[in-house]
Length: 260
Image (tube, rainbow, N blue to C red; front, side, top):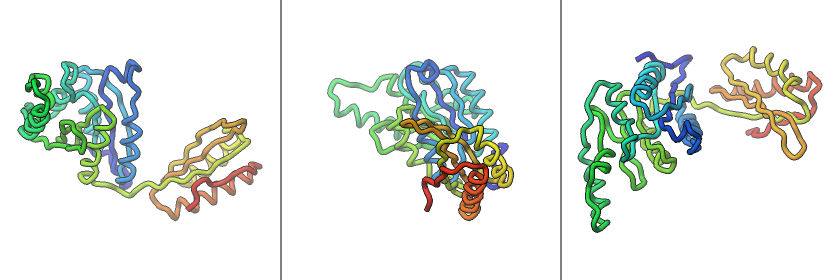
């Protein structure tokens, strides 16, 4: 596997699987939640892709991402219907077979015992399939587990279930240094005015991430300048440097939003 690590970074990608996402019928919120969760564990989310429920496309995207990054998290496609083909595609990508995991079968059987007249069927059994060599990713909610194989974590698409599964992912990650974020708010000046001082500070601190996010709120316009880095001391010094550079450019309404 070719690691996506650079300068001590531990990296990850998210592969969002599902026609419903691409069609716009379902709005994805999992990417946001995963990015925040990984950040707490010192893992940088470096790429995200969305693919349809097409076997070959899932395999191609998964193989590309798992070769490039330290971890890949997939969401969607592990339910009971015919178009839930993520398990099949992941097994094919790793060149292994699927089998019905006995623990998942037991969970499903225990659940249907409390529902008179309901019997185990083929659709339910689809959710018990795990690649040979894989391990379960359990959740605290009443749903079948996901699984992990190699550097890939296969999670549910339903946000509440996905978030519960994440809690069983964190302790398995080899985290790097946690990224710290600070925000400087500029009011009454557009991006064309702040571009030069922002670029100068960014060039002087290549290890830092500096982004500009314009806003217009209640008649006030400007930009939130977000600085991210792993060295808190460098981050604090960069904030001071950025504020000074902005004021030197004639920008007066500058304040840090989240000073420690």
